[in-house]
Length: 285
Length: 110
Image (tube, rainbow over all chains, first blue to last red; front, side):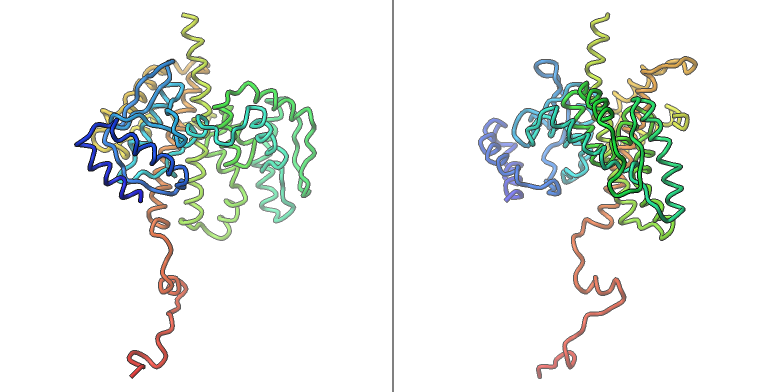
């Protein structure tokens, strides 16, 4: 069905103007909602460019058509850097569009459409929920090698975040995890409320990837690089790899995917909170 | 943060990735111009503590990681996971087995 339509579309492109294709387009967009992220479509455009639209928001253009989100609203991002990064993702697609490699586009779509219809408070609560089961707070009792590795690698990050935010988190090897005081959560809640909806979307994505609020904040506060954060998040797996060997199609595959997703999330947080600093500078001048 | 590689190396790393994405004409791309522009703008003295530069450096490292990891992930994906599932025969072959042939061998019906 999709293939048939794309063929029709490319066949028509020369003959009729873009507007005339639009009714078909609407129909198609309705269908696209149900296609999964793993679906690949043929690359139907040649040039990718960006332009600045109303309100100073940036848009991405595929040939002469404007990029839209899955729900059909116009795709707009707050600054040039993000627009260029998204445009580069679209430009990087060779014959087929592989949506599962376009993490920044996906994040922008999520922020624009907000498919789960949540507000900031709900997103902050969801992010804080990870603190109760944070990767770096759960320790093992055996084997001794892993116990020591977790202590050596995770304790410094934990101490860093406790000093940075002046909170108590702690670690535990009990199945219930450490007891995290309410004040700690309040401090983080207050800190996260300064984030915009966009940066929260990115942060929540990063936390879900790393399974850790501590590592995510460590990376976003520039204490850790993406590679370090991913390594710490996969510490037990890395330990097992050292014992049993590395399997490229599983371990490396997972690691690169995790790195790509984490980097995309971190960059998204950085770029979507950047616009406000630029505005401040302009006002000062 | 001391372990960060120098901005020049990161810059070259990003350009290499852009070239892998866009081919020989990568110098005309939006990303190329933007990246070069940013690296030139943030080329401040390294003597002073400069928060903006550190921020830009961290962001550039993150972007490099994004580009490189996406490329590597896609390469592994096409190598191992893009062909769908193996046939029963291939799956058996993986563990050194062969599927049973027809009882009595070929042309048994006769």
